Amino acid sequence: MTTSPSVSTIGLFAALALGACAGSPPTPSPPASPASPASPTPEPSEVVGDTAPGTAPHHTPEAAAPPAAKEKTVQVVFQPKSGSALAGSGTLTETGEGVTVSLAIENVPPGAHGAHVHEKGDCSAPDGASAGSHFNPRSSPHALPEHAPRHLGDLGNIDIGGDGKGTIDILARGANLRRGDPRSFLGKSIIIHEKKDDGAQPSGNAGERIGCAEIE
Image (cartoon, rainbow, N blue to C red):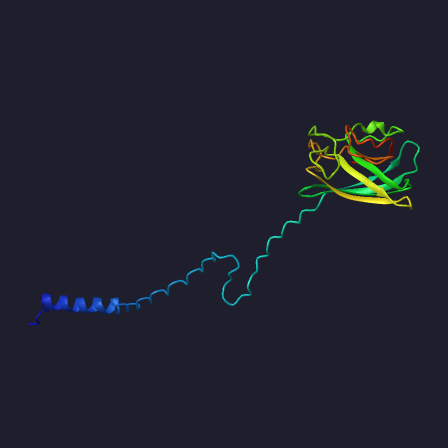
């Protein structure tokens, strides 16, 4: 009589068969290496002119210095008046103290001749009368340069030599060359007189106007 295999034996063989069909378990992958930390991005320098190592230094150009202030000057040219042959020119320069007046004239009789800044910049009249009176914004009495107070336009006398030529350089303190300023020589005229300014009132007894130059 043949003996049938037991149920437990059959179950064992079934389990072994299933295991063989399934194959070997997968080999686990090795753990991934930790990522290297990213290199930090260098921060831009906070100091002007700094550069990254190994690069050429960068130089920030210096700001250009402002141009030096220039002295203000005005050139004038004389016209003959009252039948004279006077000729000449001059330069007015504004300074921190006032206006330096430098004049050079010729074809004038030898001796001292009064010179003044007059209130109007108008030399159109044949006798120079269109230039008005002495420039006197402070309502001072007339006087020569060595005295004060005096008209702002009182320049004293210009001495003419035997060759008919002469020059004068004088500082008119308190005057300026600023348009619209009450003490400005701009818009005025320079008058040369036929005689010496003796300092007397009201205008020095200097006689006719023989030369006129507009200050523009």
